[in-house]
Length: 352
Image (cartoon, rainbow, N blue to C red; front, side):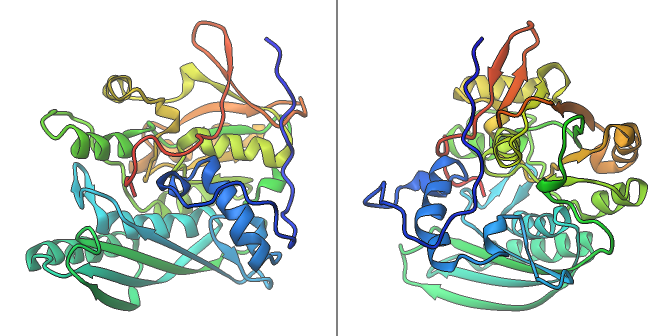
């Protein structure tokens, strides 16, 4: 097959690019190509600075000492198999700090509540936030609460910000990735998004699928103790594994090759994705991390991941090729190839 050269990553300039959309649509928040367009056309030209335009999971202070991240959560339903909006909020923020090479120090926690929200629902969410923060070993140290009129919000929305201390030594960054490097993931993909989608769209369907939402800072600390030279990490949330590897290929300019037979996907997840007409590689995860290491450290990284409770299904799933075309290519189980692209929008909204 003929593969065309991908557009290389470039840091946006301060000049405002021509507008490509007159109004915001739901898919602009899906973590795919439309989100990139919104950020590049509206956000970065106005706030451009060396920290922001690096587009990492956390902003790293220029002295390299602290990391800061923030996320909002609007998932529907609020409770789903394996988790809820509270567990999601803490896990997502902790994970964004951890994959950036930081140890979480504290969280800021903000709630927007709809008038009429039952007290017992709020109590369940707050209990989940507290339990997940304890699991992650991090405290909520500040916060804010607002209430809006009936019908102006779907129950409640959460925003969590986190600050972390950067570990000493080389920090994970896409600029370190080079040909020959190896890609790993700590377990099966697609289960969070599918669990939420089934709970919302097909509540009558009984499934064993559960969200994988979990704080990964313990797993990542265990990995980095065994392999200090981890080159790059990212949690494949919105846009899924496909979004992360496509971004990494475009940014580095290297071809990334994934082996379909090596990517862990549960049989139930494949069936659910087929039923919904989705590609499991495009579906969000909330307890997975993509890791890139030098080939000489791949087995040590795999062993470290598999030794942790959140990494039993860890696998080596691909490598960085010597070809310089900025594409991600999936080697299929039947011997073919297909290009893996970042999803355009989001197939079904409200999964985080």
